[in-house]
Amino acid sequence: MKKSKLFYASIAIVLLLISSCNKDGKNSVKNIAVIDNNASKAVTVKLKSMEKRAFSIGCHVFSSTTFNAENKAFGYMGCDGIYHIIDLENGTAIKRIPLPETISFAVLDNLRNLLIGHYYVGGSTPYDGTDHILTVNLDNGNIVLNRQFYVGGLWEGTTWFFRDVENEYVLIRRVRAENGWEMIGNELVFINAFTGQIVRTLGLDTDVGNGVYDKRNNRLIGSTYSNETGKNYIVVIDLNTGNTLSRVVAQGLGPHLGGEMDYDTETNSYILVSAENEVLFFDVETGEIKERYQLDFNITSLQFWRSKR
Image (cartoon, rainbow, N blue to C red):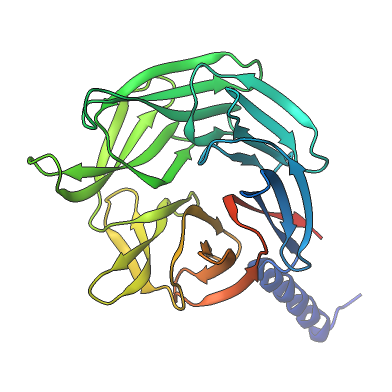
């Protein structure tokens, strides 16, 4: 049977609508997991309906949280020396892993099911303490690596991420002048999570904080403030060269929280949290606010994911 041109045109329109819907992320629900800093609770929020679930977690370490969106596993370093992983569907414990040190800047290697973090051992001055990487097998809790990788590092405390294919744990180091106190730049430090060796460093041509890794495009997205203009900017950095690919004004962005950021790949949105605990979705290309969601509690440890409707 012959099919009319109208039939094929209808199919094309349907496919176009499906493609557009996927691009805009309209076929899924936006969620965040955060910690209510006042009540010491892990909280999940469906952003459109603002439906919340909360589970008590007790004392925790800042910048130690991780999240696996596939099984809704939320991890954090407790003040009891244990890395706790809980199910955000019901708040039950999945694993409790004793660690030899208290880690921060925590990330997951989902390819190998590893937890990776940093800890610092103080020296006689702020410039001769030692930085260590700790890698833990989440299947059995065994320590894969516990090794010093730097001396006297001064780390930008709002940017850390992991490149799973390259097996690289990445931090930003503040570069000091020879006088020891003047800051003259920033560089990315790429550390092998199995050996603790520094694979490479990459100088950046701009200041950046609240950085998130865009794996699909091999770029770092972050924010920076200009004293000259009094404005905040969204910057995009090439992870091959360290060069700035784009720099646009983050429209309407005032004071905001450090270390609270994420990225929505489906809509190319850079996510920040204002000082008033409002979750803001910025268009990376234009700097415009696409969406905003006001929370009614003080948050830390933002994690974003999408779920099916």
